[in-house]
Length: 287
Image 1 (cartoon, rainbow, N blue to C red):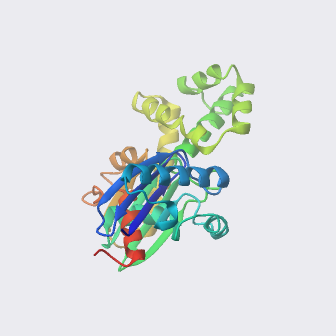
Image 2: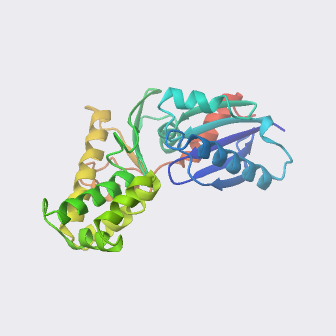
């Protein structure tokens, strides 16, 4: 039996699915984060753990060596990182693409459209006539302005600025400093924090903004502006449909619904479905 593997690996978690040559899903598996830039060794381990869990669930008795795989991964837009991983995978054939590429395929199939993936990181992609273009996805240090990680990191940065009296304070800013037992605690946390660690603060920013916290509202509005700018850059003058993915996807979809009236669509399928579709394409199509 020919089997294909789809992997959706991001900063928060890694999901895998094994399917037969007709696209029928036989097993699924999950593991921890799979960002091949911020933690390449951990990403590889989690990719293989998710793949093996999916194989076990499939009941086929197959192993990784028999799989044709498409891996949509955070950090794969950096060719050197993707190449390093490619040489360390046990699959029969493996194609590594960005998480934006599989989100785009899942959301729109082969039709024109845009995806805004706003999770631990953020990346944006558009498809026109089969041609794909992407922007963002550069990681927390220099990019990911529409991401949970950036939102959380900016929250802590703003909390320290407020503590020093350089920006107006607000309840949320005071709370995060107090919870860390002072500004020194925040700095200690940040020294070893991963993007996923920072992203855990994002739901609090969203909740506080909805409750009227001025600082949280400002931070969320700044992130929203970057998301809109990215979508507009990809769309140009074309009113392409837009699908939102990731943990913050629904938040930004709601906030930008009026701006993109009639264009915000529910995804046809998930990013993992997109990876499986691309794996079937790599294998040579459905039987």
